[in-house]
Length: 145
Image 1 (cartoon, one colour):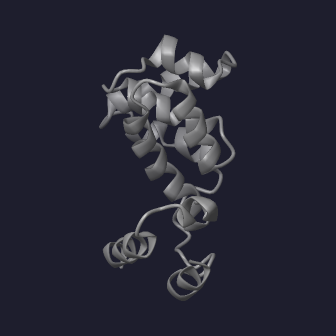
Image 2 (cartoon, rainbow, N blue to C red; image 1 turned 45 degrees about the vertical axis):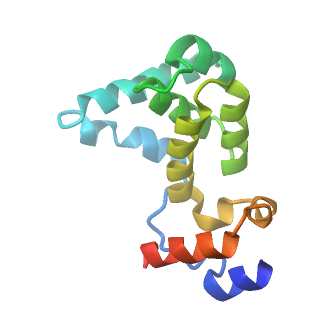
């Protein structure tokens, strides 16, 4: 796996468009989306309010956003996990522990963390345990290219 990753995707070789300072950039888009996406703005504001009260992720998912597979709750839960975590792995673990429909929150988390950390954010140990990881990575790189 290490050889494959070295050949196909060197650390730091992805573009600089991803969100490194994520909380400010995620919340920084509020003024840009205000008129075109009012529902997304409401979701961001709901997450911001929960964070301001210091609520942990499991409680936020189960008592505020809702744990079933519907939106905006899944979207809000994913944003909360990302904004209160310092890594992709931490955000994924939080959402798994919160229960409910963690698969939909996990997809949102993967998209946001992919934009924030790039491929370097995926723990190598997770890649090593992924069935057909070379095929998965090759397909992803072809789609990306």
